Length: 246
Image (cartoon, rainbow, N blue to C red; front, side, top):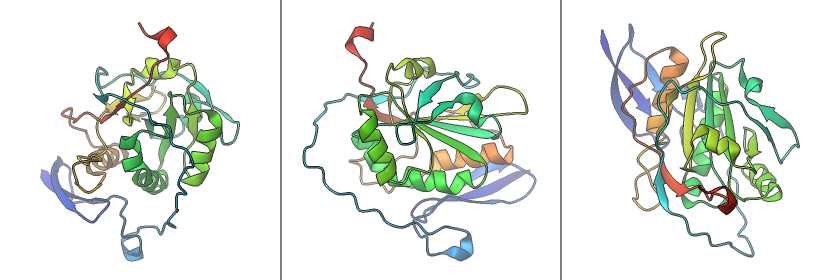
């Protein structure tokens, strides 16, 4: 039977959706009201970001995620994590029922707009079994990526795709871009969600709720189907190396 499912977003905004499930469920996303311990939220310490002495101004075209069909198998990769020096492979996440791959970078205003809330999402859902990994295919540089991961206390590996081969394998085109994969037993990770974080953008004054991606993650972790109607992620285009541009 059809059951109303309520998603509580980052700022306490409730959104109703309908799913074919056998019982009523309340999907509690991560929330900025971290003092509500009775609701199962966790307290996060605020991090003050010191202003940079010099800011690199990079002009980037506004781009939408595109081109990848649902059911797409997660490509294999082997990338370094600048913060720890560890090499990470796709197979390192095989034990998890779902994997969120995020293409981000340090400087993109669309990523900056969501950065703290991406951390909240990862902290909340990794406790529920979700694996999360972030990849930069831009020229952020390992040193600055390590500083970024440490500054924001990233609870996921932040990997450097210097050659940009992994971005091409995933057919990623912008930052941020989100790929949510599910895993059934020994079968490869299959793409079930390739869409936006939510409707909020740096200039539209809408609150960041994480509604869209939170709903997709909840469906995957509870074994429910995800609608194929998905809004694309919007962000800065990936800066491709000139010698590899075709």
